Picture: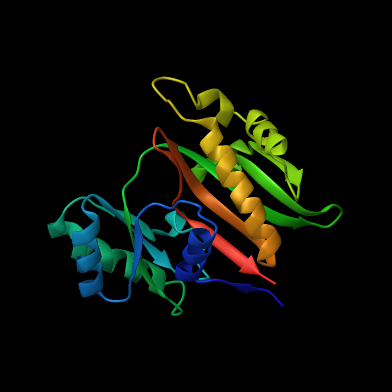
Length: 210
C-alpha cells in the first residue's frame, strides 16, 4: 500500500539527502504565515499543502504575495480555493520567490523496466512540451549527464544571459538517485526544479512511498 508524504515530510527527506530547496516554511495559521513572511521576505509564494491537490496552480492554490498588506488576502484566497476541493489540508507553504529555468525530475515505476529516473522541461507546461528523458535506476554520472543532454533544457543553460552550471544539476540527479534507492520510494517528482546562476533548487516536491 502506498502513501503520500506531507510537504513537510517531503522537504525533510530532501534535506536528508542534501538536495537544496528554496526557503520554505509551513503555516497552519495566518499568524504563522506572518512570522514566516517576516523571516523570508517579500515577494512570497503561497501554496496549499494538501495530498488531494496535485496540480495546485490549475485550481488557484498557488498565489504570489508581493507585500505585507497583501499577505492576508492571498492567504485567504489560497485557503478558500483549496477548501472547494478538499477539507484535508495540512497548511499553507510559504516560500521565497525565485526566478529561473524550470525543470522537472523524479522517479516512477515502469511496468516493464522497473524503477526509472526522469529529467526534463518543467513548470506548468510539462505536459505540453513532453520534453523528458528516462534512465533505469540506479543511474551513473554519465547517465545523469546524458539525461540532461537529451532535453531542450541543455540548450538553455547558457542561453540569453543564463549561466547555469550543468554539474549542479548532475549533483541533484545523483542525490535523488540515492534517495529513491534507499527510501522505498514508489514515485516522486520535483516540479519545478528551479535552475539559475546559484544552482538547482526544489520548489515543489511530491513523494509517494510504498
